[in-house]
Image (cartoon, rainbow, N blue to C red; front, side, top):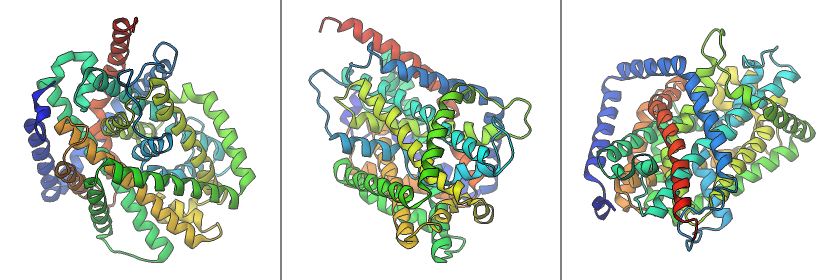
Length: 499
């Protein structure tokens, strides 16, 4: 065990991460145009030159996750044989799903299918605003939020959970590489990995925070006519930061568990309301049809690089999504591993890959399908994609109550993710399963500050760029994790085959 785990935090990891974070915030405030120019250059380079490797990496991760659920590995535990799960199945999944999906599903659930409906993806092509295009739009939305996305979290979770709980390792991002570099995770290489995980997490959550701020601002204006002015994004981020920093200060059991449970019930209630009071049969048919198309086209879509097409559609959509999920992976995997101790590999992969995929399909099929049925594309053109969910609410009964529920859902989904992110950041720099309250609060404030400087301008493009810029190295690291996970599990099986 590394002796730094006896300290409140690792001095090198904390001070390097904190210093660079502060310098980045200052750079963004003092030289905003230069910062934007540099990040956009990174976006262009990674999405045009490396799109093919993003696609291959995620495709391999999906295959790896299904292998993990087989008989060879599925019965193995994330922990020792005597370890038992800490949380009930419902609370466990509610925290897992809420921390990993955040308000992104509320933002893109209604917006992405409608956008593809009026601007067909190059893989399918066709004429805009037709029934066939609507089905194809939903299929691509399923693809972006389905197995591929969740495999990134699931694979890293297994690598972390098994390595940490069977080898008594600190719960840090670097521990996922124990089966790759061994005890070197306790040295310089481990510190570099943990420092990088801090920056990836900051960039990934800043992306989501930007979406949340834009959507809440749009909702208040669209639904209630409240125009908060140019500083609305900063105001909303400030309020959210204050709330989740206080919440994270109370710890996992009091903070994240309570928010996660309430959030899940509201999520289900909103979905059920739209299904019942919306075009029910249309939504069921569209969802069923799109699942079939998803299964049929999964491999071709997974490897589709749009060769010969003008523009950078793959970079702006599929690569952005894969990079966004990758930038979230360090903190989400640490958090899921933290709450999954004592669970088998099969049930952990099922809960972090299969069940969330089905949940996303149901949400997109119903809420996104309502957007296609009511054709909210005009609203998207006039008010931006962030207005889609509120445009759908206008076509349903009890609009006022539904709008309040949606705003609540956006906020609580985000708070669940922000809680888990701040806790995971504190884990990265301390190595403790339960890091100190002051350390958790510090990273809560830091998340808000980075989100404010990246998202404060209100530009969706700049917000998307943040996650891609920070996720690029993670693509290579995830390939190492894929190799190391099976190497480590096979070695563990050989060493304990007679237990």
